Image (cartoon, rainbow, N blue to C red; front, side):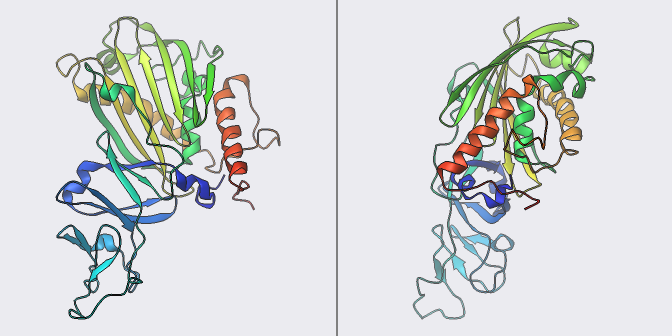
Length: 340
């Protein structure tokens, strides 16, 4: 599936950056091939426009913010948060036509991140229960581009069989490659999945993050897939620690994805330093990145044509593909492929 050619994907919310980046001024971003510029007003409102001045197509992200408006760095044309041109320095006393405008997009702040929907959203920003629960802290982890297709990362997040091999240096065990069946409960825009798995606690970094000196433990995992490219994975250990991963695979274009990840934990900084939490998840994600960047980014949604072969543990990913295929059909689209 070529994400930039599937119009319905524009109708979802995507985490595009930590809101703290806007404290430094306007920021450019590419979402589903659409170049956008974001900034924050004095009252904290997030503004998002197409990153293209309607005068000579210069990037507005190369300009500056003034009085809550964005000023093009080429000729000074100034646009408000709705995209209307409110000032042309070369014509200070003449009215400005309504056609002098730039397209505006929806943008909101939630969980400390900026979320953008390019078209009328079909569903809301994912609801993360731990964000409102007392006793949980939030630890920012990663905001970095990977050379992958967004769906590859989502499938990998629910792929129990890869752990033994991809993560053999962190918590996997090649001596136990067999995996049990995952329970999957489908909803309108995603699914929930539960799974118990024995894991190795290997090395000092893992022992600090998991808070155990034992060489092995069991993880009870409850995961939610939020269509199309976000997941919540709540990991519970026998001694009570909960480590909840939020991963957004935000598609910049067809082969580049911004990985946005943070975690919630029911412990404190005094229990485990944030740096130790991040260090273990960093080791794990580097293992994933190496493999996923070797995979073709164009994931075929068809599960029957033999282009990719499957095994029982692939079930969550195959459900994703079928649900995305159904989404396209419901909105009058056909899957677009790179080879087409």
